[in-house]
Length: 441
Ligand code: ATP
Ligand code: MG
Image (cartoon, rainbow, N blue to C red; front, side):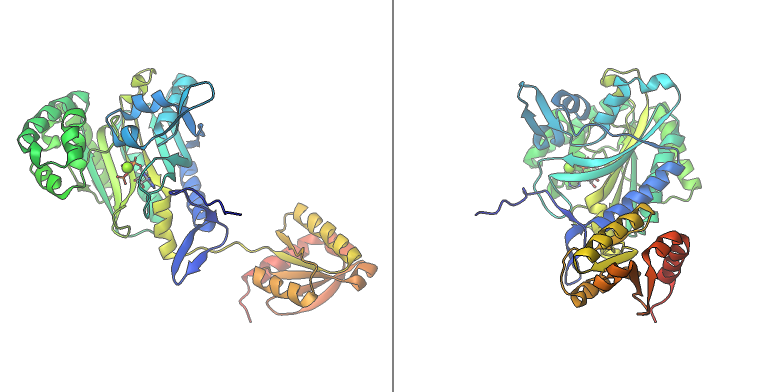
């Protein structure tokens, strides 16, 4: 029968590294779990709470928040009609859903600042390539309810701390301010006036954007367009006093904290809702898909979506790109069980199943060999499992109610009554922990 493959642009994340030479063939769960564990710890220490929102929402939520003139809404959304003809969209990013939940559940009514983080799959119909998928994953933070430049700095520090804690190098942090709505309008006029005489020389996408979304032209990947954009008016020259003050304070605080950054006045970000601070973190180890983290302030969005005027700032990190980088550093290891249980014979197998269960209930990680094959084969698997010790049950052990304990590093073996083992588990656990740390002789 014909085999049904996964869809293009989607990926499995497997429990064990699959190496082809030195390259990882398929994503490996250990790298993901490491990122998630480190991120979780970091968020907790900074008093951020996790929020989980649905993977699909009403299409209009994304149209209104991300903006109809963006690539994401214009070309990349997975939109479908459900059985009652409602237009639904698989979320292409996390912020819209978080802000919708914030409004829907009146989280603002609790007063003060809401610090939130999320993690999960996102969906965009894009051309799949390394670091660019149709189902991909983001981890992100949102701070709602503070207009203070320190909030911008706090979220930026979370991103740089996370990437540093993971051991990533060759990262560059680009920063810009896109001002407030008024500044942007002002700048947009100047930009269109500058670009219009070059219209024929722009790439086709940018020609269209000249009317719909001219700021995005600064972001074009087309070389000729980039050349033209390089001479465009600088958005930083169009910031009003308040925007300028906000941005200066962000820059000052980052400098005081020793965070290196590069000002990039052409960094405008793809989504419409950004105001003031915008930033991206790029890695020079990722080829064309270089952006690891993107974020910024979006003071207008909550109101735009029907909530009370609420300033906000956040970022999202693409986990595929992050794990690609990490796997280059360290392909990741499975965490081995404490014990591997081998058994053969009806009575022995029944006792082994029960013993494994009791030991798990007492907090030990136990792998039970289910093969029923010869002891020699089960022992080989015990060695490969990385367990500290192997428990052995044959007909004789079963008849006497004992179990052989074999320490896999030293090969030492002793027999013990099953009741005694369970009766003094603390000693056994201590021995397991000691042996796990001991060097291989
Ligand atoms: P790009 O310019 O690479 O398309 P973007 O501006 O569309 O990125 P954002 O919407 O800012 O990306 O999303 C934040 C991060 O999510 C990106 O920096 C990237 O790491 C990741 N990301 C975005 N789209 C994809 C995708 N299709 N596959 C994998 N990761 C993605
Ligand atoms: Mg994109």
